[in-house]
Length: 141
Image (tube, rainbow, N blue to C red; front, side, top):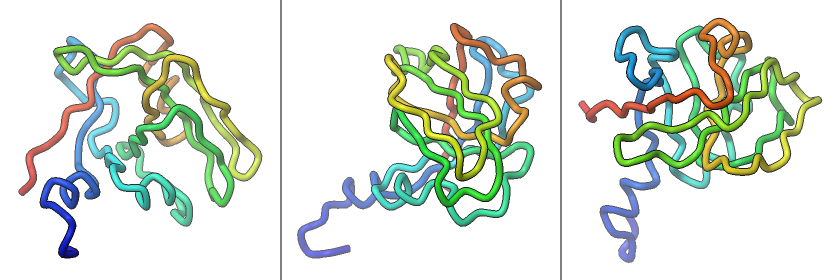
């Protein structure tokens, strides 16, 4: 930590572990291993350089547009609005099977974040625009 950095600044820069569940359905998660990219570097790097995502893995980015440059595999993108008081977010857009190197998603109106998931997850989980999900953070071990 640099002399001028506060503990809260350092904490905000770290990534966090979470899972993605449908609102009102605290059963099986849509994705049980979501990384929340909170730092500039985490958002910048995203999934670039990764070979793949496991079937239960994903990345949450607090952005409303993404690109697939330097990506090596297709993904699904689930765009979400701000959480309500209970942490529930509405799905404002879905972009299934984005192709590596070839896809760009321009800013999505109403989105405050996006969950990048393995291709096929949106269809398999039955996620649709207007659906409601929750990102549940896990306590640090």
